Length: 216
Ligand code: VGL
Ligand code: ZN
Image (tube, rainbow, N blue to C red):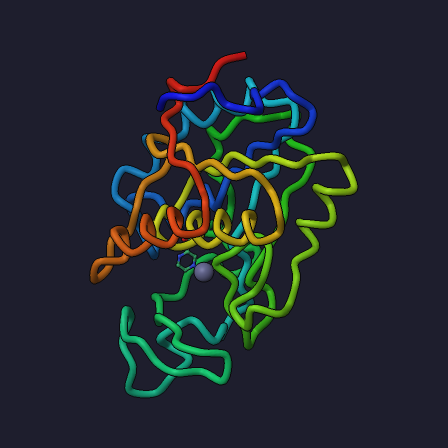
């Protein structure tokens, strides 16, 4: 990365957004992301640098519409059309109040201000921390951040090609300066989803950096 970043982690106008560091996305989990657990130490170090930290939790009711098990004859990773558009079907994951939905116990960011739960609507998925998959229903995060004077977000966590990418694109759309810290993310990479995610991120004006690009 060339140019100096316009916001540093300690700037009160910047926030770190830590996406879905939950057991179901870790090796051995229901929707495992390879090496997802290896991010924990780096994300803890990043968390310590930022004044503002928001953590998200994918938080689905049992029988959620994104679960293949909710659709007769369908298998995980199939795609179907729902009233709000195409939906990838997933193994049951991050069911509210189950162990798989818990944040990794080694995630250690005690000053995080907000744990935002998303995907709680039985009939609408929400990869994004800002807007649900119907592209209309707001989670309230944009308002929360803006009311606290935040204008810039740095996004890390799981999975890069789904919840991280959708959150970062929606952050841009909501008017935030947005960076994805690439070495602090891991991808599912389903049918070219990782390459498409970087295209979408670039088109939206999200900037890719590495953790080493951050100072003070
Ligand atoms: C996610 C698929 C389904 C994610 C959540 O956190 O990236 N991916 N639900
Ligand atoms: Zn989910």
